[in-house]
Image (cartoon, rainbow, N blue to C red; front, side):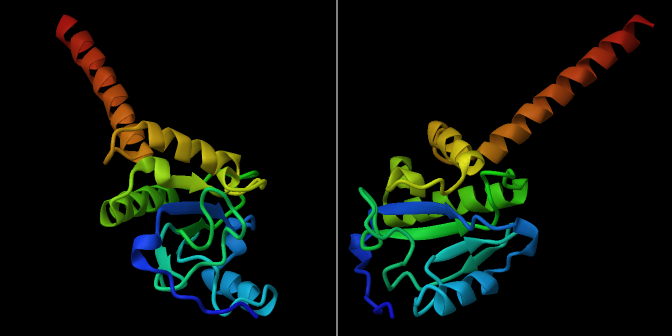
Length: 179
């Protein structure tokens, strides 16, 4: 059985992003918790936070305690990070817009709170050999890191789409003026 070890607040130097590697539509946070407790021997769910299939942010294990999400990792591990899991298998499916919006808003808020920079947000695969958090979510994380702080990938996508619509409207107005 895993020991309950308190995590010192100043000891959090990373945020590690995971995927559940399960079917998004059929996986609940409670199912992950049961699996971690009953099958993995954890005292609670291993992640501190979970983004569910509908894009809701759900509290997992208290941040007062070390997680069980990145054992033996480097540079991040259970002792110096908090873990957030997005429900889905992002080797096979893409995260939803709601999931990405929630994830990146949470990350930006947590980075400010912990006084960390975006380079301290890592996909699990950047800590140890694994496919987690899946190629599609990892791509979103890498794109988000490139953006200026406060500009999530979702906001930039929306802005781009709005700019396209504005250009189309300008073209229509121009055509109408010629009539």
